[in-house]
Amino acid sequence: MFDKDFTWGVATASYQIEGAAGQHGAGKTIWDVFSHDQGRVYDDQNGDRACNHYELYQKDIAIMKELGIKNYRFSVNWARVLPDGFGRVNEEGIDFYNRLIDAMVEAGIEPWLTVFHWELPYEIYKRGGWLNPDIVEWFGDYAALLSERFSDRVKHFFTINEPQCFIGLSYVRGVHAPGAKRTPEETLQMGHNALKAHGRAVQRLREKAKQPLIIGVAPTGSVAYPSTDSPEDVAAAKKLYFGAPDLEDWAWSVAWWSDPIVFGKYPEDGLKKYERFLPEITDDDLKLISQPIDFYGQNIYNGYEVRAGEDGEPEAVSRYDGFPRTAIGWPITPEALYWGPRFLYERYKLPFYITENGISCCDVVSLDGRVHDPERTDFTERYLLALERAKKDGADIRGYFHWSLLDNFEWADGYKERFGLVYVDYRTQERIIKDSGYWYSKLICQEI
Ligand code: GCO
Image 1 (cartoon, rainbow, N blue to C red):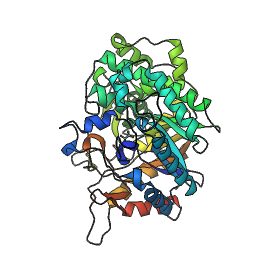
Image 2 (cartoon, rainbow, N blue to C red):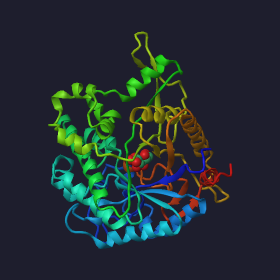
Image 3 (cartoon, protein in one colour):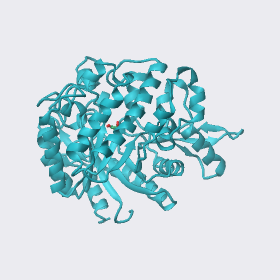
Image 4 (cartoon, helix red, strand yellow):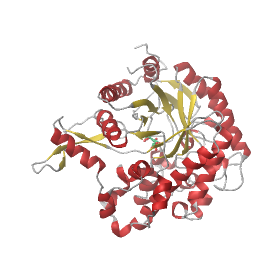
């Protein structure tokens, strides 16, 4: 599958794997606080220990090396390097990421660093978080620090990961940290500040860069895919995919987050639909948000079927009884990895990466001591076949990162969901490479 220079990788995020939460000089983040608040996370679990990657990172890198994984998307915990989110640097935290990056380089693994995968420092949250306009500069300073300290070895950076979730799930729905619902005026303002912070980070990353950097983003979204290849169905799916959702779902928009970054303007339909609740949006803001980036990534897990109704307008098609689902309950829709990248490439015309895709399964250790997970292999193969077809049909697809290297802390679902190619026994921190991990290894090493 794919040619030799295709980027194959795996992805993780700091709070989900590192453990050592709030230790070695790190500050608290909203997830540290939220996960200790009773009743927020499944079974009151938290990321205090997680996969203890903070201590076991060498082991995890050795596993990647063994599997032939050459690209690793990981994230830095903002409060580990800047305990308050700004100002004082925690050198112990910087040392940890230096050791981690050095180990990757030594193992021949290319680091892909995500600047923000949701760990908002608690001190910044106390000052208003995404609502405080100062966050744009704080985030820029944080990005500058990462560039200054790591860009001699790290060339690939993502600014923000899934604003749909760290604004939408967090403040529109209130189910992720900090677990406080806010008004539409407030959430739209937060979103605008997050986009400005992205733009500022792009500027500051480049300003301090020790080599030319390759910078992108990793938003997400469920893909509207057409029932058939007919031009009517395709147009209907595309319209819904990029259209403005109703106000209560505004943060799930694809175009709202990506059009300003790539085109320097918000989509017209959203501007109309959310008009009463919008913050002030200036030309300077849009200029800042639309700093040139080098690639466009999306985390894609699933989609929904759409057809053209009698009047040609998009119509969602309901799923048949017994529709295949993953353990977490998400529909299995490989079409998402065909139509998503195609639509996104057609619209944004930037080199495209799948920055996350994967499946949670009810994995268990079998009597033979191994973890047999045929569902994960089958899922991944189906999705990759669709992705390959999208590339053949013209989308400039450069790479694929599987979520995730390890089973880990799945946010509000705690350790209930296992997304890893590698099984983690949280009692002992033993790692067991799942059958799918060996399969992925063969695939990316072009042995199958
Ligand atoms: C993200 C994702 C990951 C999840 C994964 C499975 O923001 O990148 O939410 O952190 O663990 O998508 O849900």
